Image (cartoon, rainbow, N blue to C red; front, side, top):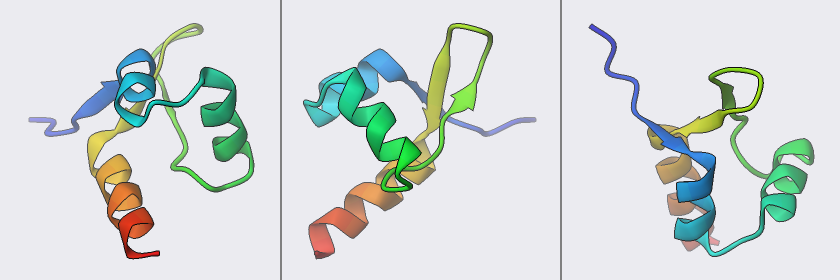
Length: 60
């Protein structure tokens, strides 16, 4: 059984209140967890990775 929880990119953008361009720039610069590729057009992010990133941001 796979317990991998994934948040889709559009949902993540709404949650973080950022643009798609900002998200991909952060990923490219290593400032945000890398996405998972579902298919040629759909990407998502591991919920666990996003939560860890959010916790780290609050500690700064």
